[in-house]
Length: 242
Image 1 (cartoon, rainbow, N blue to C red):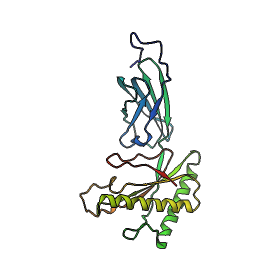
Image 2 (tube, rainbow, N blue to C red):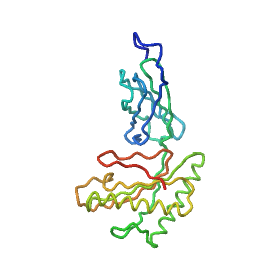
Image 3 (tube, rainbow, N blue to C red):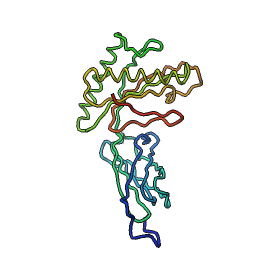
């Protein structure tokens, strides 16, 4: 697959070709991501590299002159299951130019015991503090293990089941996520901490309304270099830094 200048085209574009990757929509589980180019797109190529340093996948997709700014979706098929440490992406325009970018979608979800809140409360009770202290120790251990990585942040994501109204659950999940994020910050964690609540919009187990599903009532603690992927839908979500 080659990208040659189209017949009759000018000698070259006046503006520099640029590429951007929507990091919030990098889907490691679904093996896909989205790219935009500032010129008409010929093709996009990528290479996925694992923690071992070995190549997990190579992929290329043609876009036949898609207009500048078009969302260009590309997926890949890994040759084995391994944590992704780096993805290199190259965009080619219809004039024969290309540009590359590398992203580091490394993340670690911290296994922990859930903090139990009183009904409709975001206050962390004294009885729940030992759970958070144990989680903080795990966060510190992970940071020590991966101290060669620069720019790690902690992301706190709150979730609920479907008991109650979606609006109420969204607000409550945000309050609880922020409370836990503030606790970590208050205990002297030096890395950036961000939070967001998703209410019932990102369940582990899909249910109908008014279902008390314990697996969906949770708060995730995620160490990552890039902001974790956000749910898409009617509600606009965004990570909020403390």
